[in-house]
Every structure is written in C-alpha cells, then in structure tokens.
Amino acid sequence: MTQHNTQQAQRQAAMAVLAHAEAGEIAARLRAIPLPGHQDLREPENGLVMLRGRVGGDGAPFNLGEATVSRAAVRLASGEVGFGYTLGRDGEKARLIALCDALVQSRDFGGLVERDVIAPLREQLMIRRKQAAEETAATKVDFYTMVRGEG
Amino acid sequence: MYVAVKGGERAIENAHRLLANARRGDQSVAEVSLDQISEQLGLAVDRVMSEGSLYDRELAALAIKQARGDLIEAIFLVRAFRATLPRFGASEPVDTGAMRVKRRVSSTFKDIPGGQILGPTFDYTHRLLDPSLSQGFVPEAPAVAAASTAPTPRVTDILGRDGLIETSPQAEDGASVGDLTREPLNFPADRYLRLQNLARGDEGFLLAMGYSTQRGYGRNHPFAGEIRFGEVEVEFATEDVGFAVPLGSIELTECQMVNQFKGSATEAPCFTRGYGLAFGQSERKTMSMALVDRALRARELGEEVGAPAQDEEFVLSHSDNVQATGFVEHLKLPHYVDFQSELGLLRKLRKEFAEASAESNTPDTMKEAAE
Image (cartoon, each protein chain N blue to C red):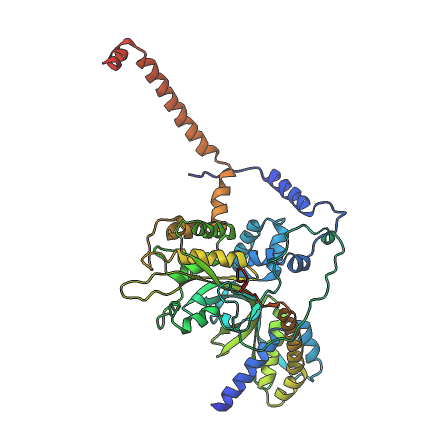
C-alpha cells in the first residue's frame, strides 16, 4: 500500500509539472530517451471539466464555469498504462503526458523520465514562477494611516 | 406568436460576405492575431471567459475577433461552442487560499500576513490618455524584489479565528452540487446556484445592481475585506486514473466583502460576508458579484426585503446577457404575421371608437350626459 501511495505521489508530481509545459517542450525532452514500444489506448479527445469554487473560499462547493480539457491514454509494450489530462485543447500534449505517465510507472524507464524530462521541466517552471513572484513582490506596499493634526 | 418567414437566402449570404469584409476592415492594415488579442486585450478575454463560462483563452480571443470586439456577441459564441463538447466531470473545488497571488489588497486591515500587493492595476493611475502607447511602445522591464515564501491567508480566515465574522456554510455529506446548466433554476435558489448564476452574469448588470445597494436600495455597509488575483491549481478526480489528476492552473479573481450584521436574539453580532469569484483578472465583476451575493442573503439574515438587488427572482432572471440579448434582439427579426394581426385588431378598435364617438354626438346621449 505504501509503495502504491509513493508511486501515486510520483505520478501526481510529474503530471503537475507536465500540465504546465508546452507539448513541444515535452516532446523535445522525450527525444533524449530511447522510447520503448507503446500505443494509444485512447486517442486524444477534447471535452469539458466543470470548475468548482467554494462559497466564501472555504465553504460548500459551487459550479464556477467550465474549462476545455484534453485527455489521452497510452500503453507501453510492457503493459504500463499512462493517462494524460491537461487544460486546453492540445491533444498531442495530452498524449505526451500519458506517455510520460506510463514511463514514470515503468521499472526500466521511471528513473530516466524523471531525470531527463520531468526534472528539467520542473526547474524551468520554478524559474518562471520565481521570476513572476519577484515582479509581484516589487509591488508590495505599506499604507500608512494618516493622523489628522500633529500627534 | 412568432411565425417563421422563408426566402432571402441570397441577401443573407451576401450580407454575411459583407460582414466578413467589414470585420476585416481596411486590408492595407495588418490583421490582428489571436495571440495579440490574448496578450494585449487580456481583460476582454477574461470577461468573455467569465461570462461565456468557459476557461479557454484562445477560444475567447477567437470569439472576440469573430464578433468584431462585441463582447456580448463573443460570449454568445463561446456559450454555443461549449455545447458541442462532452463533459468529462467536475474538478475538485479550487483552493483560493493557496493561490499564487499576483495582486491582493484589503481595505479593512493595512497589515495583513503576506502583505498588500498591488500587482498590475489601474488603481492610482491618473486616467490620462497616454499618447506614447499609440505606436511602438516598449515598457520598462518590471521591477523585482525578493519574494516572500510566507503564506497569504484569506483575510476572512483571519477574522474568522476570533469569531468576528460568520463562517462559510458547509456542504452536507453527500450533497450534490446543483448545476443550472443542467437543471432549470427554481426559486428560492440555494446560495451555490445563485453564485453560479452571478459568476456567469453580465458585469454591467451586476455593477448596476451592486451600486444600487451602496446608494441605499438594500444598504448593507460593505468593506472590501480582500480582493485577490492570481493562479490556482486545478485537480480533477477521475475514475480511470484513480486519483486527483493535476490539470494545470487557471487565473482567478476573488472578492470577500465584509458587511455589518446586528445579530439577533440567538446570535451575537458579527460581520457577514458576500462572495465573488470569476475567471481571469475581473475585479469590478467580483466586487459587484460579492455585493449582490450579500444583498440576496437579506431574507436568510432576517433583513427587510424590498430593494431590487435583494429580489432573487428579479436578479437571477435578468443577469444572463446571452438570454437577455436573445430576447431583446429577437425583436428585430421579421414579425410580419404578428404585426398584421395587431394591425387588424387596431383597425377594428379604431372603427368601433369612431362609431361610438359618432353615436355620442347624437342628441340622446348628450341628454344622458347632461343628467
């Protein structure tokens, strides 16, 4: 069970990075790996997911509005099945995420895909986020409450 | 009753060809790209996503281009598109407390944990037209400062710790989340359905309704407890995968209004809340939404109900600009048969009136009138 949970956490962490990358970036990184045989288990398909918020930010859920989502599934010749889901309508990106998810679960390729695909993309994402956070931080203000007359 | 007409195919086809040319404008002027709309008219894109109720920047940009910048027409196009796709399911509720904040201000506390962050805002600009933007403008690179890793809790969470503000209503176990795109809205409507309606409601309508509460039509003394804008992660729990799958992030604006409440025999006085949430950077929209959300809680909070913004059926039935424009604009379609029958009726009534007038001028009726 623990091993199952660890693998699930790894897959989620990989997906959280891949969903933020462009299809072209993922494809370019995957070229560094000698890919095993694989096939589409589910062709890329576009659809909608209803996005939910919470009343007051922390209360009961409500339906905010939908988002476009693309999804796909890929099976490695060795049997691992990977799923790809991403916001937007880029079916190729969903397929690449599914392929990566299958590779993450593979004993032979799990380490490689983490090292050559996920880790560099994660680093890029962190750099972009850090840059944005620093630009935001420069707009932090201190408001002073003015007291009328001389105190 | 609307009776359909036939014919006019050639004229309609030619009108649409003319529209395509009018949309393109002077062809010696460069065509706008979807990227240009998405990047440089970003707030229009945000509005079309919010009221079109579909988060997809590229589609919203396409809709704006196709609609020649008519945002309500663009919203209509986006709504029509969403009806063509299957729905995979619903996301986990987003956690706005974990937002990667790009802007966050509070008008109630100046020293909030995580700080006040102005972000990209029109606030404090002088609203003078800037001629330097008319051509070839290159902005100075953004300033940077060390980013804090301190959390930025919602201001309402801070007030909540002391019990000074009401807690948010929680869902009952196993309760389903009603969806007004699937079932028609009935009155009285639960708050989560009202929020869904307001989230896709017309910004101008909500602005006017919110403004009316400030001017005294359902006054409830609001403070902008917090407005935050930034990125939140979206997760989708799906059976095929077996766990919550990260889908990427979306931009949201959230507004927490803090309002007065005098308490009751059984409840100590505390602040109450109005809530606004919308796609993108939609500050005016979420502030208006939060004012109207609070106004619509009048009955629940035992307040006198009389102002338009407190009238749930009135507000929720007129907030949707696609429905509204459909009904208003259908008036310009051919109503020839309708109008002929009205015309026939009117002629008959006028004839009767004329006959009655002629009779009333006879001596008999003049005598009656004199009595």
